[in-house]
Amino acid sequence: MHTFYIENIGETVTLPEVESKHAIKVLRLKIGATIRLVNGKGLEAFANIVFDHPKRCEVEIIKKTEEATPPNKIAVAIAPTKSNDRIEWFLEKAIEIGLTDFIPIICKNSERKKFNEARWQKVAISALKQSQRLWIPTIHAPIKVTDFIKNNTADLKAIAYCGEFSKQEFSKLVDTSKNQLILIGPEGDFTPEETQFAFENDFTPVSLGTNRLRTETAGIVACTLMKFA
Image 1 (tube, rainbow, N blue to C red):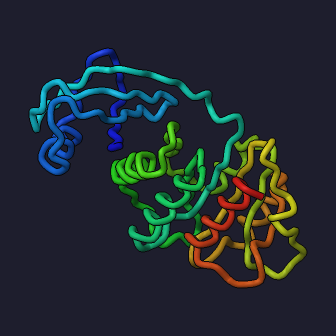
Image 2 (cartoon, rainbow, N blue to C red; image 1 turned 60 degrees about the horizontal axis):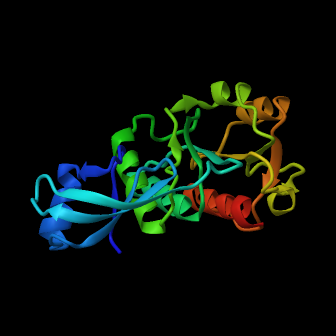
């Protein structure tokens, strides 16, 4: 069944123009067709099309269900890559896995410091519909890494860093009963000053394995471990 995203779901709903066009022009749905609606805040609804206009498709709700807020956070604070495609790929796949919070951090070695947050939101909505999830992750405003570190209160706080010092295996630390967070640095990694500041604020240095990973790959590995380990 085809899924559509709309923030406000009443008893009778007019789909946004983009969703209306997709339903009527692309999918060629007609009056009487049943579709699935989500609002990204735990609400799922099933509806029948009652007016098949490509700019204002109207549907009538036949059933609604609500899902409770996810009990614990799976948060990744990551330095967006120079390539937009790579960070969008991470965001899409991490949402499919179970990411609840995406925090773009700005580091000294960051190669990208300007971001298209509206584009990220579109990627998130698409991934939400694709994965059949009911809660859209929170996409936080970009923040300087040191500002984020000193104001974070997650139960489990980890930092993935390539430096040569003692690290714990992240797979042995993760705990799905806790609010979990990991910091993933830019292609040039965190600076020694940034990592030291993280240690001073109770972030645990962790290893994601023996292979050196790209930024977005490290994010996917970490997200998977926090969700399933």
